[in-house]
Picture (cartoon, rainbow, N blue to C red):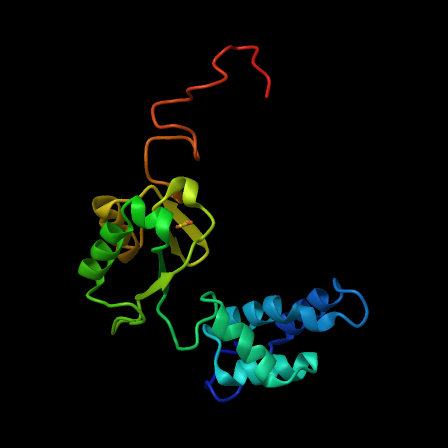
Amino acid sequence: MNGRGAAGIFAFTADNLKAANAILAKYPDGRQQSAVMPLLDLAQRQLGWTSPAVIEYVADFLGLPAIRVWEVVSFYTMYYREPVGKYRLHICTTTPCWLRGSDEVVRACKEKTGLDFGETDENGLFTLLEVECLGACVNAPVLQINDDYYEDLDADRTAALLDALAEGRPPTTGTQAERLNSAPEGGKTTLLESDARC
Ligand code: FES
């Protein structure tokens, strides 16, 4: 059994039960309920989404009222409250990304996939999601696909990313521009002396 059964039934697999108990062991006595987020993440990775059964299960696991777990799940966009596609496209549209062209990223994603926010295609390949700041504004605009970040995007770079995914060619993560991480394009502009120390 892989734990991806009917949405109405959920239990950790034997391996994930072991992993869940290892997560709980990181918390001080009496504070295990603080493990709600990693346990939800573990459950979501098993089932593919955070179903009502997952929420009930995690609540029981931690001895929490289910509403407390619902509050967490409904606050964070990282938890999917509906089944999602193989590739989840989380487009940041918060101000720094917007100023740097996130509208173009949104347009490219919508044109390539034919989806609007919150939708999944018929083949279960892509899900389109709008999210708030992903904490990588230095390389805005940013698109998070599953666990990876793709940065410094424009419409063409976004379209190329989606083509690569659709063709089963995993794209290189991180910046899509000609620069090292978040260093200036064209090379560094400070600390140019060979003996410079920071
Ligand atoms: S505003 Fe988009 S990553 Fe921060």
